[in-house]
Every structure is written in C-alpha cells, then in structure tokens.
Length: 444
Image (cartoon, helix red, strand yellow):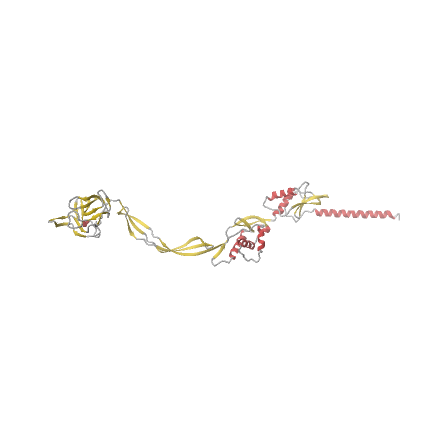
C-alpha cells in the first residue's frame, strides 16, 4: 500500500495539470473571439482600433443603443463623446439612440474620443437621405424620393375629387424644394402624400391602401397645415359690342375760329369678342381676349373747324336776311317823281326781322345820318368792298366792331325815306354801287 501511494499521487498531479491547461486554453480562445472587430457596423474612418492585450481587465465600454462601439480611455465621459459627435453632425442630423458606458471584462486597447465620434457619426448619417420636400403654406409637410412623386400625389388628389362638369380643383400654397435632408424611413409614397393632402383639406379621398390615422406621424406630431382648395372653371364667352366711331376735324379757311360744321355723321360699328374667362369659387378672376370678329366697321364723324380770325371776310357773301321777297332790284326806276339808279336790292320784310352781316369785316357806320337811309349799318370787308343795310329799326353793333359772316346786326324797319318796311341792301366796290345779286348766292 505504501509503495503504491507515490504513484497514485503522481498520477493525480498530472491529471490536475492537464485540466488546468485545458481551462486556460478555453479562456484564451473565448477572449480572442470577444475582441474580434465588429462586422455589423457601417464603414467609417476609424483610428486607434482596439488591439488585443495578453491580459483581461474590467474596463468601460461605449455603446450607441445596443451597438458596442469600443473601450473608453481613462477619464473619457459620455458627455465628451456626445459633444464630439454633435460637432461632427453639425446640427443637421439627430442621434436616434443614447450613448452609454458599460463595465466589461476586456483586453482591447481603448479608442480615442475622436475615433469613437467618427464611428457614431457614420452610423447616424447612414440613416439619412436627401429627398424633395413639400411645403404647405411655408410648412414642411411631406418628403418624398423626388419631385415627381409629390406632383403625382397632388394630381391624384385633385383629380380624385368629385366636381361638376368643367370645374377642376387646384391647391394653392404648395412649394417643392429639392435636397431636403430626412431619415430614409420618413420618405412618403404617392398615396401617403395624397392622404396627407386629404387630411389638410378635410376632403376625404378613399384610398384603401393608406391608413389615414398614421399619416400625421410624418409631421412629427405637429399640427397639419390647412389648405383651402379652389374650384376653378375656365369657360369661353362671346360678347357682342359696339365699335365707337372716331371724331375727326378738318381745318376750313371759309369758317371763323370757333365755328364747327358737320361734314359727315358718324356711325357706330359692331364686333363679336370671344373671351376665355376664369372663375375661382364662382368669382371671375381673369378675362383674356382670344378672338375678335368685326361685323361692321365704324364710320368716322367729321367736322370742319374754322381758322379765320374774327372780322375777316370769307370772300363769299350770304343773304343778309333769311326771309322776305325782292320788291325792287338793282337798276334805274321811277320813284318819287324822278327816274334814277336804284343802287341796291329792296327786300320786303316786316319791321323787326333779324338782319345779318353778309360777310366778315369792320363796322364803320351804325346810326342815322339823315340821308334817306334812316338807321343803317355799313361794313367794310377790305379790298374796297363794303355792304350797306338801310331802313333798320334797331342796331345791335357799333362803329369799330369786328363782325363775322352771319353775325347779328339788328332789326329791319321803315326808317328814312321809304314807302313801307323793307331792307335796302347795297354792295359797293371802291365807292361805286354794283348789283348785289352778283355777290349773293342764288339760294338763301
């Protein structure tokens, strides 16, 4: 028995040594697996990668949510790492998970705060993308992959509303902005945007594939902006209208300044106008002329306007009275017991008949000179031509007055040497009487 005891003890020692060696080998292998590089992290620029040490120790390890980042250097804090990450992200990106420190057994070398911050920034940015934003009245309300998706959604919504014939719906206050940064999960589909528009307008559009109750989550709990849809109708309208005639004037040297004579009466024309008229919610907002058809042209109205200064002779005489008959012509006649030249025309008219200047000139006599003419008027027309108006009952002009052709001179009568009321009208050239009928028109 005593001889076998050393052999048994030696065998026990050998077995124990083998068991300890196996345990050490298993622990070393486990530590090596624990310190292998993570393969589930997005690629990022890393510096100061962890290196395997020969001995494990209790260390602080940074985590982003449940994602292990690496061992912290002594004295590094969560706040320091968070500040470094926020600096790299520049305020455009938001971290979705919390940064934490956990105590673990590890033989890995610590990473610098900068290396850890770059790793976190890369992870955060991988969740973001650039899309096209739909702003409603200045509020970012939806983000889609591109502008086409948003435009198709607006078209789907507006065309899907039941409207009367010829009336379509328009949405105002929409703006498309490219390059809006957002989380990939926030990108909306065409039908989701269409449903969002429905909620903003309180106009229900039945889209079975969209859950209306979940659409407002894309606004991060904010209030939905209001959109007031506008019902637009564009119609063609024909209107018949009058074409006003133009009024033209032509200078006439036979008329005095201020005189105006109608030469051609104006006539209005007509045309048919076709407009494209736009109504918004029943109120006209624009009218565009698209066609004009002239049915009849307008005829201009034309007037002759005088250019002669007051008192200027026209060279063409008018009758000094508008009524009466010629009771005695120019020439020799027997009267009052003598035969002598009658130097003018006698026009039988009642006392008080209006008398007018035969042409323009200057009044050189307007009184009773006691020579048989009674009360009379003489007008000097220039170039040696004068006219006489005798036997008047009343004179309305005075010597020196400038008169125009047709101006009122006074009233006829029976003053002076007469046998009855009448107008004695004379025409004298260089002091000699001439037949007035050579100067007067045939008709009054």
